[in-house]
Figure 1 (cartoon, one colour):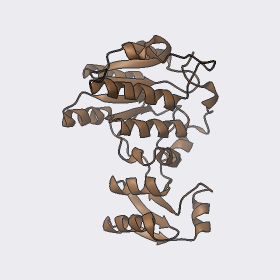
Figure 2 (cartoon, rainbow, N blue to C red):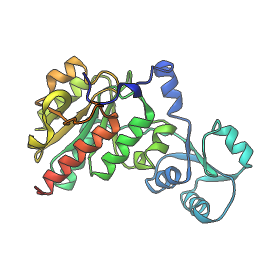
Figure 3 (cartoon, one colour):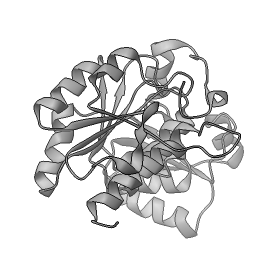
Length: 265
């Protein structure tokens, strides 16, 4: 039984082809576009409806980087964004720029810290993935690993939900999560799975190299992934609702890691 809410589970909405096309769609909203520009993401055109305030900052940043800025009507921008709340701006270009697992491991090596990596095992809801990425970046994680199949990709919804954090947190998209876990283990990373059958999360030692697995919204971790885990952790539940949303649970586990690493009892 998963430790979070089954009601958040979303069906596969069209398979890999749909997800791949979404990765080359628009980055929508002021903060996601600003963060994409600051992070040096590969953008082709910035579309703006209006001027002043943060829109002026966006135009200036885009022009400094040699990115074309086009003024469009609010109606046109709404059509481009399929009715999504765009806040007067959208940017075209590849939303996703994936890295390798080795690239993520190199982040901690460069910082001189122990690896802290989030592994999402078939998180299908892009809002959940975006929220997890936002918390992971804020918590100082080195990167996130997601599978190619049965998972949300780094599309425009993920970028917007992450409030721009997806522009900063390295993401590896792998064909096989268990194989990726093997690579982490070979590099001294301990794997912590999140499961209702596990031990109280506050009792685990998470001060070392951490690979934190967050299972799917409806079914938790897959069997093979679960078998790869060195430890299984759970959140204590005291109310009548015995589960949490995946992104909420992920945030609690991540900040327990932060708390322990900061030496706070």
